[in-house]
Image 1 (cartoon, rainbow over the protein chains, first blue to last red):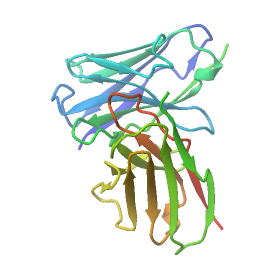
Image 2: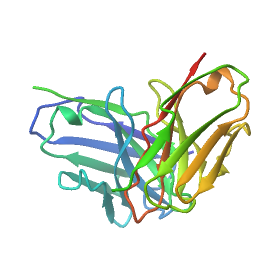
Image 3: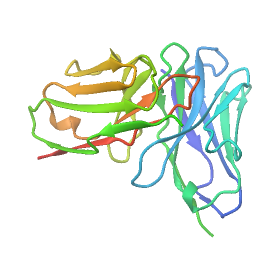
Image 4: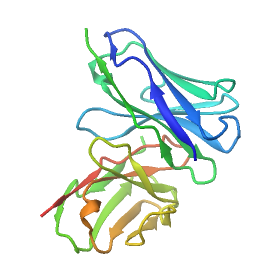
Length: 120
Length: 108
C-alpha cells in the first residue's frame, strides 16, 4: 500500500524559499507507474495544483507558479521535493504531496498534508 | 486559461436526499475529469476518475457523468458521512491540472 508523507519547516519568512520533501513508502518512486505531484490549499480555500514530476525527472508546473517552483526527485531515497522561492503571505497553505498513476491521471494517494505559514 | 466552475458552491440537504452538482470546463476535456471528497482537516479522497469510473471502495451511491465541458456528480441517497466538500479536477495533461472551486454539502 503506497503511503506518502510530507516534511519540512512549518514557518518560512517572506521572500525566502519554502522547501518540502515527500517520502514515499510501500512502493518505488522510479517504477514508472506514477507521476508525483504537489497540491496546496490556503486556509479556508480550494485546492491548487502546483506541479508534477516523473521518475525520469521530467516536470510539469502550474503556469501561475512556474517562475518560482522547482520539483525534484531523489530515486535513491525514494522521495521528491518542492521548492518555492520568493514566498509571500499568499503562499501560506497546507501543502500536500500525492501520486498520480499514469493510467488514470488522478491523484489517488495523498499525504496527510503539512501546514506552511509565511510570516516574519 | 483553463477554468473549472462548480455549482452550486454550497448545498444544504438532508440524509436520504438525491443530490447532483455540476462542474463546467472552459474548454473541452473529453472525459478527463476527476471528483474528490474532502472532509475538514483531511486530505482529499479520490472518488471518480475519467468522469465516471468509480474508485475501488467508493460506495455505489456515488456516480459521475458527462464529457466535453459539462460534468455531474450525483449522490443517490445522501448519508451522514457524505457531508463534505467536493472538488472536480481536469486531467488532460496538455492543460494545467486545474481544480474547481468546490461544492460544500451541509446538513439541512
